[in-house]
Image 1 (cartoon, rainbow, N blue to C red):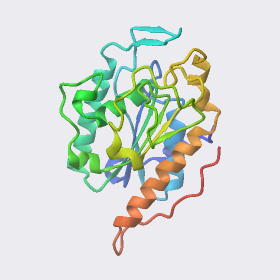
Image 2: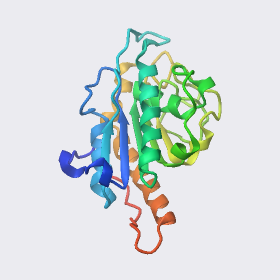
Image 3: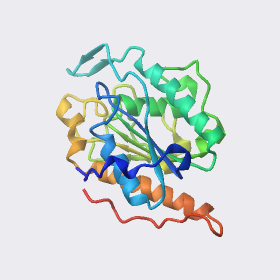
Length: 250
């Protein structure tokens, strides 16, 4: 776990230098993701520059779920609505706030939504008829942090965790589908998480282990480092520069 500072660490979107967008997991409340809110707050507290936070508005529901092996998920129309909402948000952000860095946080179904929005339409499980994210919007994404991703794909350079390297998620992506984001992404997968590790020993307990295994802090630290690197690289005289933070406390 990581400490949860007060919610007022965030600023208004129009004055922020960094925009954190979180996409919650299935059945989580629209406001206040139990897993992602502490990560967003840790980023805002340690960034030393103004940070805004948006919780993507989408259903985060499912129709049917079977935790047996292999785990099966029927998420209905929820992912499609999430992908289209996220694409709209990212394009709007790039159009109206082109200097703002974006950090994406996703858990479970939310991780799938983020990955599908970033992927080319032909690879998506949902919203394949929506256009690809524009280069302008893609270029503003500083960091992507995913947890318990149902589309976890083996042997990707951004995979991190104590997972079985021979196992993948319930619906893995084509290899290298998200290669353009490799240096900006961390796809956290815990051992025996039934969403990202489709194996006979995987369970719900594995899927919720991110609350206590230190990966919230690791994700926040990675996002902070990525934002710091980008802003230090692009800053010119009088610009806002932040130093790279120490590893976030677990």
